[in-house]
Image 1: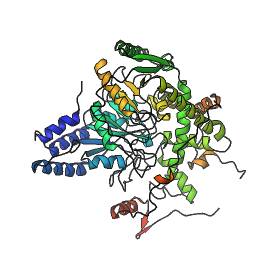
Image 2: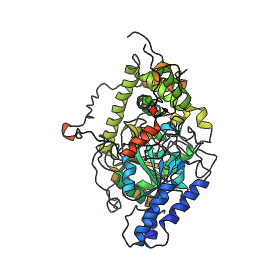
Image 3: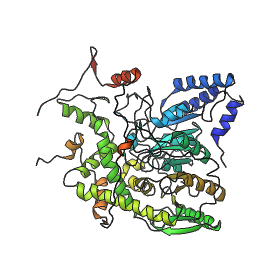
Length: 467
Length: 87
């Protein structure tokens, strides 16, 4: 089993087996030479200066914190002061962050060292990391396949050991799905556990900051460092630190549920299905009660999610018009300038979503689509609440099938939307969900009730030893 | 107010048209069952005790510099805005 890299590297630094500068330089070199298109920009100057400080501290005999000197990656939708923050778009190709996102600032405060702004789908719009001006992200295991999305660059960097951990963003599965496609851990915490301040907004009601790493312990460490109430994001709530001891005792889990209709349908790959059911049998063999649960049809989940996400992104992206920032293209009038700037600088997928959002928000359509979508979301949330009275954990595949070939998703947007069937429901419920690289080819998702993030990690520890 | 605005105008995107793929998703929502029994009360508002202090926070110099550097056009030390046409 993969152990905590953070603990291992921390010990190496403390024991002076490796200098932080050497560690950082090695990873920067790997990133620079990599052919998976994971890098939008390297933060080499900042990283090496920070590494030198850590080395000086160790040299002078001072203690260092657990995250101090640990190199990590940042999806290119987070503000980091003075760095390019492009959202993989033409519009913001030359945009520099004036300030730093709260979640990232907390990692800086703990001494972690940022190496790279990572490739992703533009504004988070995609499930394959092909919707980007920096070239499609290639899967860590097979470069002919997609890296997944939208946090594809982040998941591939972790899988290839270019970064020790990376910070992705998950709106409808954007951390969990690429983690599954590249066989690493990816966590979407309860909505509001980590501040969204400085994360470029896609769909504000489901946007979550999420760590990607190679062990449950590293997910735990990074999650703790980023969590907490932030006055700059009033949807945040205070949370307790999750201790390693808390999540190592796996006795508390008595019942696990799974959605019958996720497994009994034509869209799921036969291998994913049989592997998932084999996992269920192994869990039963450990004396845990397993319940089949009823849930909404996949197409209803996907349609509800995309209706609301498009409405929110149309509103959030309305500020991107080349006026205060962005690549302005002058037209004959102000309105003309806006529309030329936006039509020339947004990708096809981003335009599709903005247009879709404005469709459902417009007079005459909002009642039968947008408001209906909100009402279905309430029903989904109520359904989860009922389920978590019956079970401690809900287990699900991450995706219905293996990663597509590069090029396929762009040809068929509807198929791409439908491939998010297993991830979007948990986003709408604002629940904590972790992808673990076990159980099926693209992993498993472990979900618990709201604010029960510790239970998710606890069950992941149980699964690690069980299957 | 009876003027009908097309999606290209609403979206400020030249030549934008609704997409067939997206319309298929919307059809699913239109046909979904609506459970009227459910009457969820949303408490998304921040309580009065939890509001942040009503103080003006000055941006650090570095932040100001980057904001100015991000502005699309500058001429002779001035930021250039787009031409506004009154309609």
